Image 1 (cartoon, helix red, strand yellow):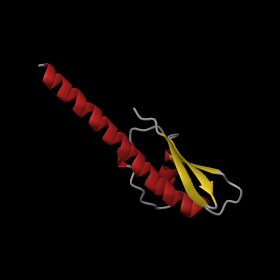
Image 2: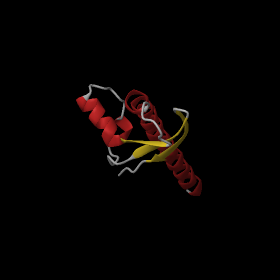
Image 3: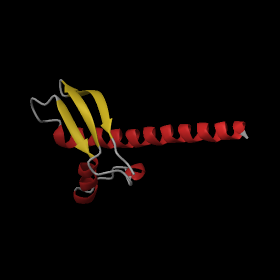
Length: 99
């Protein structure tokens, strides 16, 4: 019984981690494209934030097709923060909040 409980707990932890990585991956991929399309020309910016709300609006209003399936239950203020050096993304941070 203890072995089964440990196995189930381990699977739940692994699944949760994989799910979080999937959310980060989807958010990062869409946010990078959004940054390169709409924000890269802004001069003097050290950091750029791209929120889930911005990506959703781009899908709706600008006919983009960002894949955001794993982020459906996440708050629209969830975001990716890019650190910018020489107009290139040098570091990525995530603030993703989901139900």
